[in-house]
Every structure is written in structure tokens, then in C-alpha cells.
Amino acid sequence: MNRFRVLLSGLLYAVAFQVSLAADSGRVYFPEQVGWQRVEMTASKFLMSMDAYVELEKLTPDSLESLLVLPLSETERAPLGAPIRLSYVTDGLGRRTESWLLLDGRRGTALQRTTLRKGGSEKYRIYRFAEDKIHRLTWRPGPGEEGKDPETWSRLSEEYYEYPQLPTDPPPVVTEASALIYLAAASGLSRPGEELEVLTLASDEFFLTRLTVRQPEEARVSYSRVNDRGSSMKIGRVRAVRVAIEARPLDSRDGEQFELFGLSDLELILDPETRAPLELRGRVDFLGDVAFTLNRLTLASTKPD
Image (tube, rainbow, N blue to C red; front, side, top):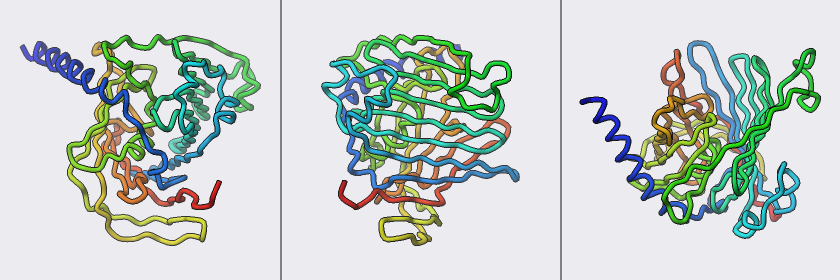
């Protein structure tokens, strides 16, 4: 009986999600509302620490095209608005991962994600979110190539992912887990109860992902704030926007966890002025609750382009 209830609950969730997912497929994001260019964060637990940063760069259509392994189709190019690149780095526990995400900053659609992992099992991987399918290219070092430049790695594999067929019109926007910090910032979510729902690729699985604004929180802050004129310390309390991130695998039979920066069970704390992440909270296996906390914020440039 309990198992039946779990299955029924998952089915009802998926049906309800698909209805709201169709509504959010037409959502427009506002990169001009994002007041940060780079955020640097640190997490620590039991004498272990990890650093992370996220950097946002606005692109031109030409510069975007130069970074793609497959050119944009006419269908992709027609609605393209405000292309951006998000750069992510996490460093700690003997592993460093660098990622670059190209996406349409207006529609939230992922276009390409590149990841380089050093330490442990090294790999260089590109996901190209093309019009008809997702192309995945993976390079790994061959014998004697460990620790060398990834451009010299000789072991290459190529795979394809079909997009899930959901009964929504228009088709859902497909994004990538590392876009969620940007999407939360650019969506304008602020009042308790407001929601954003997207179809997200993470850990090679598709997830139904919901961002929900909870009651605001008095967050304690202490970080360096950098702008065109210099830097200063921001210390005190902020009435922050608290966003819960809930994700369920589209295929309920899969057991993959949805993670961002290695964290699951996520909650994002946003500054209401700059929309910068003050904290990213979650859980790590064998460590429990962990939070990445903002320690340095570079504001979006006020200089004309």
C-alpha cells in the first residue's frame, strides 16, 4: 500500500508539473536584473573546505557561435536573445572541476556545457544541446597522458541523448543544472509562493525541477564587494530571498541524485538587490548539511560596453 501511494504521488506530481512546465516554457528571463558578474564562495566542514566561483559573461551571437562544436540551426538562431556564458569552478577534496555553460539568457535554454575534471578520474566532456538531440563528446587520457593538456588526450567517445517527449505546447525549455543560479536571479522570483519550473539535465538524467520562494530570511553576511571604483566590506544582515530547489527524475525508476556543486537537497539564498547567491545550502553524503557562503562579490560593470 505504501509503495502504491509513493507511485501514485510521483504520477500526480509529474502530471501537475507538466501543466505548469508548459506555462513556464514561454517565460522570459531578464539578464539586466542580475547585478553580479562574479561570485566567490567557500564551504567548510570537519576541517575540510571547498572553494567555488561562478562568473557571468555576456556574449555576442558571433562570439557564441565561435564556441559551439556544432553551429546553430536556423530554428535555434531565430529566437536567440542575450547569449551568455557561465563559468564555474569547484576546487577541494583533491579534485578540481571547471565548467562552462552557454545559454540563451532570455529563454533559459542551454546550448552547450563543457566540463574539465582534474584529479582522480580525469575527463573533458562537451554536451551540445542541439535542436534535435544532445550530443555528448568525452575525452579521457590514454596511457601516459594523465596530467597533460586535455587537447592531447586520445581516448574519445561520442553519444547522443534524445529529448524527452512531453505533452506540452510549446515544448519545454531544456536547461542544465548549473544554470539554476542564473535562472533564479534573472527570473525575478521574490515573493513567497512564486515558482519556476524547468526541465533540467543533470548527471546524464532529465529532472523535473521546481524553484519555489519560501518565507524570507534574515541572513548574516560578511563579504568583499567589488565594483568599478574599488572594493569594500559588506557586513551585517540582509532580508534575503530564500528559494527551495526540488528535483525529481523524469524516469521515476532512476535513482540518480540531483546535485549542484556536489550538494543535494538544495536551498538558495539570494541578495534582493544584486540577486547574487549569498548561500547555497545542501547535503553531502557522509558529511551532512553543508553550505557554500559568499565571500567575494564582483558587481556587474557599470561602464558602457
